[in-house]
View 1 (tube, rainbow, N blue to C red):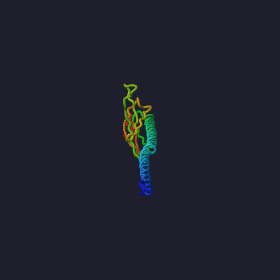
View 2 (view 1 turned 90 degrees about the horizontal axis):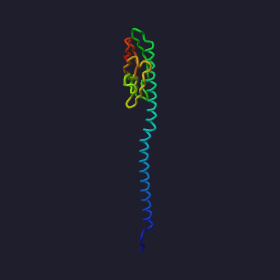
View 3 (view 1 turned 60 degrees about the vertical axis):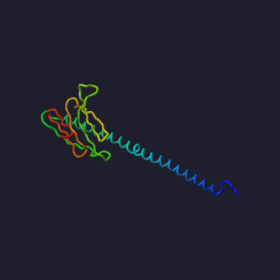
View 4 (view 1 turned 90 degrees about the vertical axis):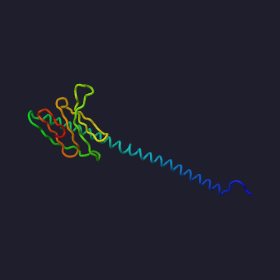
Length: 163
């Protein structure tokens, strides 16, 4: 009588070890694949889109600021001027908001700066209202949708992006 392993038992042990090794390697690879999928969405898809949106918001803010300065430069001594302009309806498939307002200047606490803020959710950019920020009060808000209006009243109040 022979004691110990038979050749059939040895083959069964090898098959079991190979199967366990296959399952362990597959589980590790699947975990790495899931982590990679989560990171790909954030780093490859969202970051470039957010950079594009920031640059577009800066361009829109500069365009609105330029239009407001143009209206101020052609404003009459007595009367009201209205101008209509169009900005993109959406950026990267989503809407946005434009606010014109005043904030305290951190460098000179006595003066207020006027700015144009273009924003959506957590993305925003602030553009200073060049040229008329210190002489006229500007305020208002709008969205990208539709035709936008800037109006100037000769009493010295620019009523922002929408009247």
